[in-house]
Length: 184
Image (tube, helix red, strand yellow):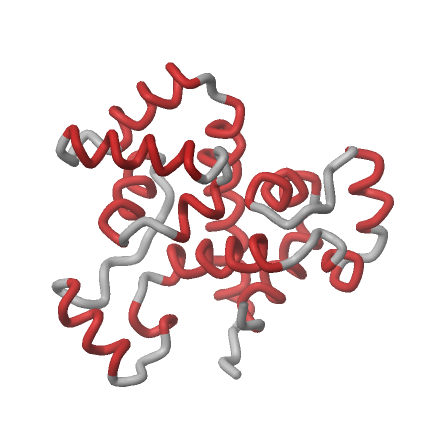
């Protein structure tokens, strides 16, 4: 298991926090027309067919950020991070072929993808694969927090993002450490 330093846990927390506040929260609240306009703005570097595909993908995932995020490529992820001014380290490989070759040779995804984008991927893999009841084992009083906020315990990106926004800084660090150190 990979060991993460405190600075990396803080970076992961900042990445999840920025992504959740700047993207997940707002995209879930947008009307169809607003999402279309937002996607044109965010993905302006893409061809119109690609933007339409991304909008269709968003709706095919029932407006769930986890399913959407997990199914898009690194170039699209970079566009999202750049547009919303979320820090993202440089690409570790010059092209997608070199990246795929490194993965095929057994390189860790942590060593292949930018730290922040892979952290978000891990967060949303956890979201898709686990009920929010998992939080009960990680965060003291999580059950009461979720019940008070009336967040559905069903595991998806929307519910996990909503739960993230309820957590205080210490709780976010605990959840980030969990996300970094577990395989989903």
